[in-house]
Image 1: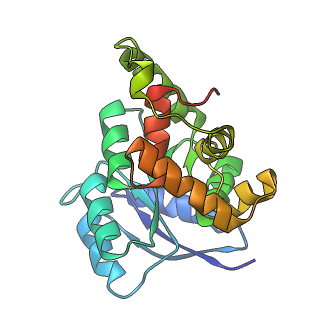
Image 2: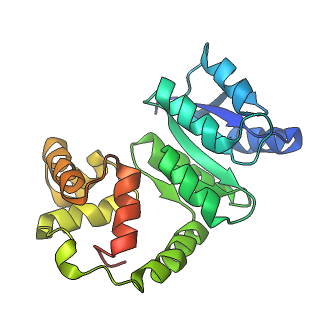
Amino acid sequence: MDTIKVILVDDHKIFRDGFRLLLQSFPYVEVVDEASNGLELLKVLETKVPDIIFMDINMPKLDGVEASKRSLQAYPELKIIALTTFLDDDYLEQMLMAGVEGYMLKSADLEEFEKAILKVYSGGNYFSDEIVSLLSDRLSILRKRKVKQQELPELTDREKEVLELICKGFGNKQIAEQTFLSPKTIEKHKSSLFQKTGTYNTVNLVIYTFKHQLVKF
């Protein structure tokens, strides 16, 4: 398979060194550079644009939230996976709204990092089980406000099927294979979902779906 180019961004060199060794166990991953904060990353991106950035959140000078926003504004094709030590729902929401494609705990095992890299590289999303649980717990509080059914968009059975697969982190090609449709048709269904939900990208669509329980998990 293609070589997946990765940049590591974290203010702790010990973590970067250990994480680099972990990623080097994957023959298809190449760590092309690293940075200790968001400002350093922006400088690196002037000469090296990777496929995936692993982005720490709490960093000096420029944190992961702002670094993600600026990086994606300058290089929209970038894919960012947020890394965190502790679950924090405020940072979770900020990073998701910044446009990251994945959100993981630093304590995740080797197999989970491999799964995240492959899913995000192929156009999907990846959230650790703990992150999904946090989202569900937080949004269950919002459900108590009871959004009225008539305010929610009416989705076709096919749109619900596509939406469920999107929420599971699958990209267009994988969804097409599972539904026996063409990637172009999947893209049309996604455009319809964006329009009906008032969202503008896949991550916002996933958040909206969790919030309003549009599909069952």
